[in-house]
Length: 115
Image (cartoon, rainbow, N blue to C red; front, side, top):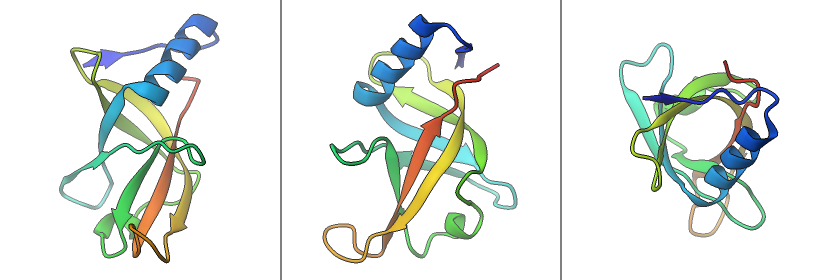
Protein backbone atom coordinates (compact mmCIF):
# COMPACT_ATOMS: atom_id res chain seq x y z
CA UNK A 1 0.00 0.00 0.00
CA UNK A 2 1.28 3.45 -0.87
CA UNK A 3 0.83 6.32 1.57
CA UNK A 4 1.18 9.88 0.33
CA UNK A 5 2.10 12.71 2.66
CA UNK A 6 0.44 15.73 1.11
CA UNK A 7 0.89 18.40 3.76
CA UNK A 8 1.60 21.83 2.30
CA UNK A 9 3.79 20.61 -0.54
CA UNK A 10 2.24 22.11 -3.68
CA UNK A 11 3.90 19.52 -5.92
CA UNK A 12 2.18 16.68 -4.03
CA UNK A 13 -1.15 18.53 -4.11
CA UNK A 14 -0.89 19.03 -7.89
CA UNK A 15 -0.03 15.36 -8.37
CA UNK A 16 -3.05 14.34 -6.31
CA UNK A 17 -5.38 16.72 -8.18
CA UNK A 18 -4.24 15.30 -11.52
CA UNK A 19 -4.60 11.76 -10.21
CA UNK A 20 -8.13 12.47 -8.95
CA UNK A 21 -9.23 14.05 -12.20
CA UNK A 22 -7.84 11.52 -14.65
CA UNK A 23 -6.58 8.30 -13.17
CA UNK A 24 -8.54 7.05 -10.14
CA UNK A 25 -11.04 4.41 -11.15
CA UNK A 26 -12.26 2.78 -7.91
CA UNK A 27 -12.31 3.18 -4.16
CA UNK A 28 -12.89 0.79 -1.27
CA UNK A 29 -13.50 1.29 2.42
CA UNK A 30 -15.07 -0.24 5.51
CA UNK A 31 -17.82 1.32 7.57
CA UNK A 32 -18.05 0.70 11.30
CA UNK A 33 -20.86 -1.67 12.19
CA UNK A 34 -20.90 -3.45 8.83
CA UNK A 35 -18.89 -6.65 8.38
CA UNK A 36 -17.83 -6.16 4.79
CA UNK A 37 -15.76 -3.99 2.52
CA UNK A 38 -17.50 -1.65 0.08
CA UNK A 39 -15.99 -1.06 -3.35
CA UNK A 40 -17.27 1.52 -5.83
CA UNK A 41 -16.44 2.86 -9.26
CA UNK A 42 -15.33 6.50 -9.16
CA UNK A 43 -17.26 8.90 -11.39
CA UNK A 44 -16.31 12.38 -12.58
CA UNK A 45 -18.50 14.66 -14.67
CA UNK A 46 -18.17 18.24 -15.82
CA UNK A 47 -20.71 19.37 -13.23
CA UNK A 48 -19.59 17.15 -10.32
CA UNK A 49 -16.12 16.13 -9.27
CA UNK A 50 -15.24 12.68 -7.87
CA UNK A 51 -18.27 10.82 -6.59
CA UNK A 52 -19.57 7.28 -6.19
CA UNK A 53 -23.05 5.92 -6.92
CA UNK A 54 -24.82 4.05 -4.11
CA UNK A 55 -28.13 2.21 -4.48
CA UNK A 56 -30.91 3.63 -2.34
CA UNK A 57 -31.34 0.22 -0.65
CA UNK A 58 -27.66 -0.17 0.30
CA UNK A 59 -26.78 -0.73 3.98
CA UNK A 60 -24.04 1.86 3.73
CA UNK A 61 -26.37 4.85 3.36
CA UNK A 62 -27.62 4.63 6.94
CA UNK A 63 -24.00 4.58 8.19
CA UNK A 64 -22.43 7.54 6.39
CA UNK A 65 -23.09 11.26 6.77
CA UNK A 66 -21.95 14.44 5.05
CA UNK A 67 -18.75 15.70 6.65
CA UNK A 68 -17.72 12.29 7.99
CA UNK A 69 -14.20 11.06 7.14
CA UNK A 70 -12.95 7.59 6.28
CA UNK A 71 -9.64 6.02 5.33
CA UNK A 72 -10.26 4.97 1.74
CA UNK A 73 -8.13 2.86 -0.54
CA UNK A 74 -7.96 4.23 -4.10
CA UNK A 75 -7.05 2.27 -7.21
CA UNK A 76 -5.43 4.02 -10.14
CA UNK A 77 -4.61 3.17 -13.72
CA UNK A 78 -1.11 4.66 -13.33
CA UNK A 79 0.04 3.47 -9.90
CA UNK A 80 1.21 -0.07 -9.27
CA UNK A 81 -0.30 -0.18 -5.77
CA UNK A 82 -3.46 1.31 -4.27
CA UNK A 83 -3.08 4.43 -2.15
CA UNK A 84 -4.85 4.99 1.14
CA UNK A 85 -6.09 8.52 1.75
CA UNK A 86 -8.28 10.16 4.39
CA UNK A 87 -11.44 11.22 2.56
CA UNK A 88 -14.46 13.27 3.57
CA UNK A 89 -18.03 12.61 2.45
CA UNK A 90 -18.70 15.93 0.72
CA UNK A 91 -22.38 15.50 -0.20
CA UNK A 92 -25.18 12.92 -0.48
CA UNK A 93 -27.65 13.67 -3.28
CA UNK A 94 -30.54 11.42 -4.32
CA UNK A 95 -31.12 11.05 -8.06
CA UNK A 96 -34.86 11.16 -8.72
CA UNK A 97 -34.85 10.51 -12.46
CA UNK A 98 -32.71 9.41 -15.34
CA UNK A 99 -30.10 6.71 -15.61
CA UNK A 100 -29.34 6.63 -11.89
CA UNK A 101 -32.85 6.93 -10.51
CA UNK A 102 -33.03 5.60 -6.93
CA UNK A 103 -29.29 5.97 -6.41
CA UNK A 104 -27.37 8.47 -4.31
CA UNK A 105 -24.42 10.45 -5.58
CA UNK A 106 -21.87 10.48 -2.77
CA UNK A 107 -19.24 13.17 -3.22
CA UNK A 108 -15.70 12.36 -2.09
CA UNK A 109 -13.15 14.96 -1.09
CA UNK A 110 -9.60 13.82 -0.37
CA UNK A 111 -8.35 15.76 2.62
CA UNK A 112 -5.19 17.77 2.10
CA UNK A 113 -3.78 17.24 5.61
CA UNK A 114 -2.69 13.60 5.19
CA UNK A 115 -0.21 12.19 7.66
